[in-house]
Image 1 (cartoon, rainbow, N blue to C red):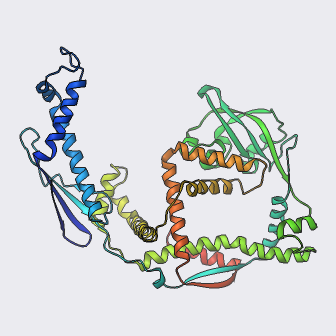
Image 2: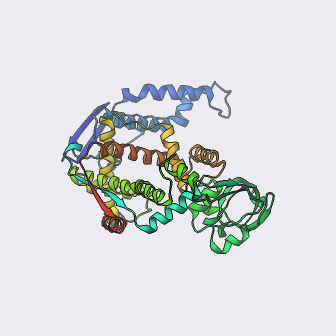
Image 3: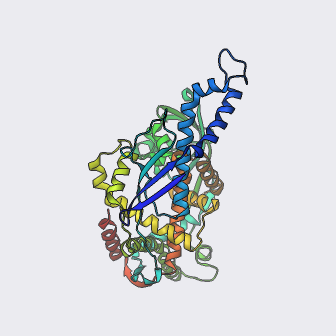
Amino acid sequence: METTFDKSSSTDARLKIVIAEGDYKPDVDKKLKEYAKTANVKGFRPGHVPIGYVKKLYGKSVLVDTVINKVSEGVNDYIKEHKLKVVGDPIPDNEAYSIDWENDKDYVFEYEVGLASDFEVDLAKLPAIDNYEIEPAEEQINQAVEDIQKRHGVDAEPEESEIGDLLFGMLRQESSEFEAQSGIPTDKLKKDTQKLFIGLEIGSKLTFDVQSLFETDKDLGFATGKSDEDAAALNGTFEYEVTKISRVSPAEINQELFDKALGEGKATTEEEFRAGLTEVIKDNYKRESAYLLDFDIEKTLNESVKIDLPDAFLKKWLFQANEGKFTEEQIETDYDAFARGLRLDLIKADIAEKNEIKIEYADVLEEVKTEIRNYFGNQGYGGMDEFVEQMAKKQLDENKDGAFRNYYNKAFGKAVVAFAREKVTINNKTIKVEEFNDIAKAKYDAVA
């Protein structure tokens, strides 16, 4: 098999593959002999079909499959061997050749290939990036006191439910034979639906239109352990049987709470407690600040690392790959956002490869668990850890809508940015919450 690669620019190239009879004939003959041994053809005993008759029946299809597979392998092998920065998939140039499968012995295939230009990522040379330490306002401190009271509250299993409780139970629909364990946070239900879940006891049963529970498919998906798409497809009347009611009663503001929240002896009065809590709140706000910092790191990488892309090729590839789902006008409108994402993916892949950043199953699982905990508000209900673990593993095992790959990509992206965070120059600034919110909104809106 002969391969020719010609670059017309730093981002556009053509790949030509000539496959001779000697490259594919042994595999074709081998496959036809296997067919002769196993084919069930009327008029012949199994294993006794003449090879010439088998060739007449299956010869062309075996030839086409074998040649196409070998050419595809040749394209992939050439890309890997020469470490080409291919973007999109090579596009067969069907106008460059015609194939006569009946008479030709050698076959020529040509492809349009899109490439990313060469680039270098030097994290130490990136412009300095601002990181914000946020000073909490009084209302944030008050809210944090309430949150900590709840976080360190007493787990209870009351006899009757009220809004704010987390219900566990079996969700069933007889007509569709649907049955699943379900956790329903009552404070996330639609307001007009919440009244159905007040005053329930263990063993209580109630029926409802499943689509009347939550505002979003994602909320229903978490409650039923389904993907957003599968949750949206649920319809009709379901029955719910309560098996457990979990409630957290707020802790009293006393020495025991001071010690639990801040550490033993760190505060002995409410004033000291609030002062210590202010520092805790700053740490909590660090998550928002860290999110913005990571956003700025990605934006700086995209703006500072120059990568040329084969724009015309990619637009053509996107149109063909989506098989008519998007018009050329829609692709043109969304292309800049696509190109930014593609450049960032290339940069992250380069950083990961050069610094041996690896993602394990545990990293992917933790990504799912974090999302589920965030949904339930990080509340410390009894048995919650086990529930979250089981739900997370179920989502990954079912792998609906490519869930594993999606969560893997999230974990991978976070790992690369975390590495970059340690290498770039950071300017730390202290600002008020309102100022931070204005800065963050402006930055997010700029790329929306």
